[in-house]
Length: 116
Image (tube, rainbow, N blue to C red):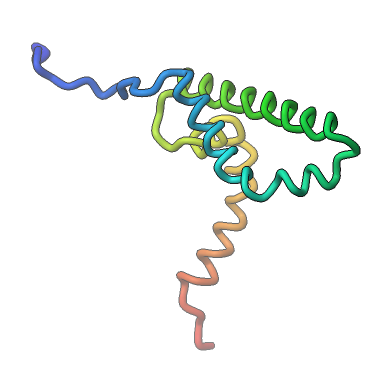
């Protein structure tokens, strides 16, 4: 059987680069906390130096998280996002732990109770 030259590949195309991923994650973190947290952090900090040091350490942690997600996405290019990474990493734990819970849920909700 010959392969069609005009066939579309099933592999996903890379649309975002690593810097795009870093900026997206950093933007989400900044967008969520920038209006609420500076006052709380400044009030809890002993000095202005501690305040700025806390923000610099937090920024470095966010950068590391963004780089980890970028590496995971480039290594495992499949749909599902964070769920796909967790399923791949913890499948044995979640599959064996959720089976009894799922069986109990389905038994109590799907099967009608006997009238005897």
